[in-house]
Image (cartoon, rainbow, N blue to C red; front, side, top):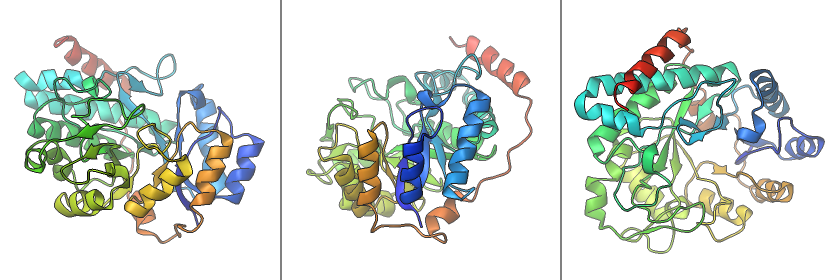
Length: 337
């Protein structure tokens, strides 16, 4: 049995206090940050330890590896990748080239992740780009048009899946209009529902067959004026599960972000009760980690859960020529910078 929580660790190794905690309250999975990633050998040892500690080789080990400003792995041990924005530019003159380039980008990152024991990536961003919105999305978006974003985000997702990594599309049902950073404050979007259906919601509906999605800590007042998507039963049930038809694993964004006003433990419970399958808790103190895990003790996931079945559906990684593909990608990008 697992607590429905994705948690993290303080450093490049699991310390004794954490080891005791995870033995007492077994988390469903882990998420990694730069502080956890010194070099490939160390990182592989850490992910192996996480698998061994939980006793399940299929537990999700997540990372945020998009490229650009959101990249936990980078030089000198891992290659540098661009943000999504460049592919949006390429698409304007060469749609097929942009789609291929995104697939290559995703395949290369997936190979990096597989080699160090990571099996889930919080990528791609399927949020639309809006002028005047907060820059928290910005160059992480594939553009301003729903169809373009749908195609490029699918290319990214397929590049991950084809190389053994499960993608998490984010931030469902759309973070692009937010005028504040949800890490710091709760965004409120007052756009009418019909306009949201014609814009922000389209990429997520088009990607409803993906295995995982991450919620947005954003209020959409036309749907639920009181609760952001991550803790809104109406938005999760009626829009994400209903209109969009998303059947995969729904993961909350980080329950310690300032957009949510409760404690991490209260926020985790609220997200699970609203309909999220898993609560993500990042960068908290040891005491906060314990409180989140303890608070979810009545919502345990068993070994034959649909969540585990979905996450088991990883494809066998392909054998790719990383150096050749990376050189090709850099040449494509150079022509559009």
